[in-house]
Length: 117
Length: 148
Picture (cartoon, rainbow over the protein chains, first blue to last red):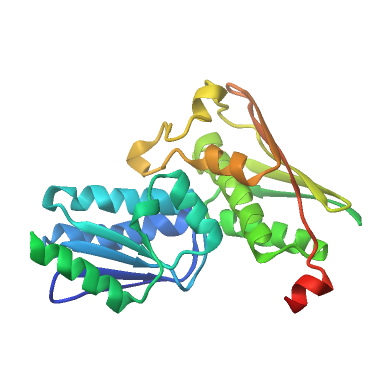
């Protein structure tokens, strides 16, 4: 459902599968927030390539983690959402965070951003 | 093709997935595109989640009822609860408005439903429940578009 990996450079990669609704979002939130509050996480990459469905609960989940990251100025990238998911992100102002690329390319982008700081 | 169905279930979060699955099966004979199915499921999911969380506060005993009619290529569907009702429907339909920010509800449910449906109405009486009614027309996948 959600594979969470924290890389040495402080980037958390969350790979979501199956269906992300209110019920699932509640479980994943606990899992990821715990990692962020350890203070090791400086950026989050949401890989949605294998996600079959998402409703507005996904928006709540991602915006919530962006708030968790806000004190440290952490970056958020959303990778490879479906057409319908992309529409939902655009309604919610998250369009600029979307990338259609591999996880490695996204890590490279964030790595660069963090390096500049 | 014409068809009609009614489905009722108790207000627990697990039934959000049941509602999406049942409704997807119901519209499959219309041969919708992947994107149409996905938009339709999203509307159902938003309305059912609202009924379970806001209407009944996940009480596990009150019933959410789905009713759907297929008329040709069009689905007319209602999602009803007899729960708390909405204090101010116009306000509830504003983007980003939520009564439950601490639950990380984004307040985008009605915006998404309105965008993905051809038409959508919400009738609500405080203390008596809410009925969301929407229509969506599907464009059947033709042999030509299948060959791409």
